[in-house]
Amino acid sequence: MEAVNSAVAQTNLLELRNRSSVSKHLLRGSTSLSCAKFTSNFPNYGLQKIVKKHNHAGSIKCSTEAYLHDLNFPKIASSTAEEKVGVLLLNLGGPETLNDVQPFLYNLFADPDIIRLPRLFRFLQRPLAKLISVVRAPKSKEGYAAIGGGSPLRRITDEQAEALKLALKDKNLNANVYVGMRYWKPFTEEALHQINKDRITKLVVLPLYPQFSISTSGSSIRVLQSIIREDDYFSRLPISIIESWYQREGYIKSMSELTEIELQKFTKPEEISEVMIFFSAHGVPLSYVKDAGDPYRDQMEDCITLIMAELKSRGINNTHTLAYQSRVGPVQWLKPYTDEVIVELGQKGVKSLLAIPISFVSEHIETLEEIDMEYKHLALESGIENWGRVPALGCTSSFISDLADAVVEALPSASILDAKSSSAPTETEIDPLQYAISFLFGSFFALFLLLSPRVLSAFRNSLF
Ligand SMILES: C=CC1=C(C)c2cc3[nH]c(cc4nc(cc5[nH]c(cc1n2)c(C)c5CCC(=O)O)C(CCC(=O)O)=C4C)c(C)c3C=C
Ligand SMILES: [Fe+2]
Image (cartoon, rainbow, N blue to C red; front, side, top):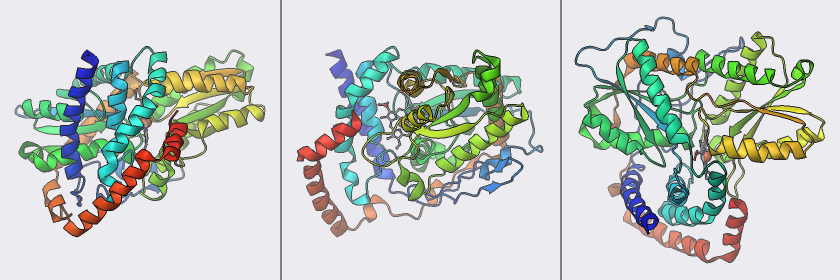
């Protein structure tokens, strides 16, 4: 009964959250975000086009370059007496108990950046989210049960927040560090509420995803934007958003360090050079990259080039490959798929694999269950004899220190976001005829989806 009540309370809370975000995702416009200079160009965000320059010496310059190698940035920052600096860490969030799994999945699938419906069918978002979350919940629950009954993401993110606060203090910056999750507690909205309550005077926003995707950092930042648009305090608060940071030297070196340590664990030293380094990134549907301009795949490939260059500089010349894991649903995702590549490598006679989860900086279901259990099992079945896995960075001190540098470097460019000058149509500007037609077609589509046994079974097959 308690579980039912908490689910109802959760749904009510989300009703409120979703109402605000649904009504605002129509408010598109050219919002100029500070320092991080948004590199995306998505219809949902109306942000600047990605500017990415390759330099063949191995470093990649993106629009985030300003705080990457710029030696002019002060390494030590100090805040003035009146200044109250806040850092907002954005992450996905995860169910803490098995009872949380279905409402967590509902929140995830109700996000228009996760299921991107054509405009005409957007009002179906929530019924579809309900349907998919209910159908997928049993499978997800099995996964969470296998890793101890819930996601460790909140605990680890809290630890990272604490470690970051200390690292900032070491760099002479006193800051409050907040955690805002997109799909579970503590929600981004709660963190923003606390930031407001604490009367923070400058805010640095740091998504805990090294690479940008519409579906991750983009989605969290969209929540932030919608609040900035509405709220007097946030619309006047200088904010700096660090959009992606996979190219930071500290991150690349920390990843390489952990990889080197794990490589040494392969038992026979003479066989170490035979180990294939297997980067496994969380996938996104192909259409995100092809149609919506998600820079995720490009950034992922750049990131791997940088890590491999760093490993090479340490005398590690192993072969490597990249594949994408965790696909959900019936559409095509970024390829190649991790499970298929593992089988192929086994067939080709590869005997040793070192898996590196590359989209995340903390352990969670996708590393602890999917990689450590499912993929390991598949690899051993496919003829691979030696399996290793690089741990997620977590609170590795070189990594946290580099995040602290990123915050310090981003701070001077915090500025008031011009979110209110949006020229995009608002909901009230929608043509009533267009709305009526959408509603009619959408209703037929909804009925078809909900009642068609074939559609339901297709869903089931791709979600189980
Ligand atoms: C870079 C990281 C991630 C991307 C990109 C991403 C896209 C994405 N994810 C789903 C669906 C699911 N993701 C789930 C869990 C999950 N996803 C990420 C990260 C990315 N997702 C993390 C860190 C986690 C684990 C959270 C935790 O509980 O510890 C889940 C739930 C688990 C499951 O049932 O498999 C789903 C579902 C989509 C559809 C998507 C892109 C559109
Ligand atoms: Fe995911």
